[in-house]
Image 1: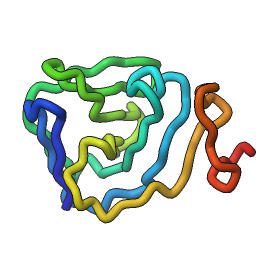
Image 2 (image 1 turned 30 degrees about the horizontal axis):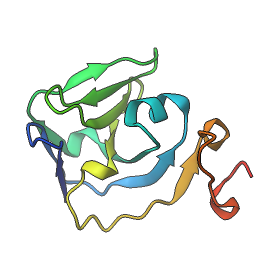
Image 3 (image 1 turned 135 degrees about the vertical axis):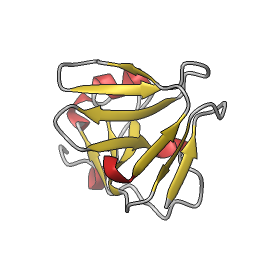
Amino acid sequence: MLTGSCLCGGVTFTATATAKDPAACHCTQCRKQSGHIWASVQVPLSAFEMQGDVRWFEASDTAKRGFCPTCGSSLFWKSHAEDEIGVAMGALDAPTGLTLTRHIFTQDKGDYYQIPPAQDPDA
């Protein structure tokens, strides 16, 4: 089971299923939303529960992003076509038992950092 919250504690969440696909996304939208890269895990909606006021922003026609309206913490990414939710790894309470397994959209990464070639699928 995973638990977590936003910075101010106004939004809390619990995931009772095994989280999958820990990934760091380097796309432009994720970088602009989070301030750097977006590291998240996927959790089935059927095993996910959140409490508190979450605001949603639709950055595209395919997905929305959830954040705390009080402290601004970026918390969730939800595709309209899937029954899973992406949860920010930085919002999870430790220990998580998770390890990033891949980097995605590395061709869109910022020019201010490097990804080690062994971790960059586009290298």
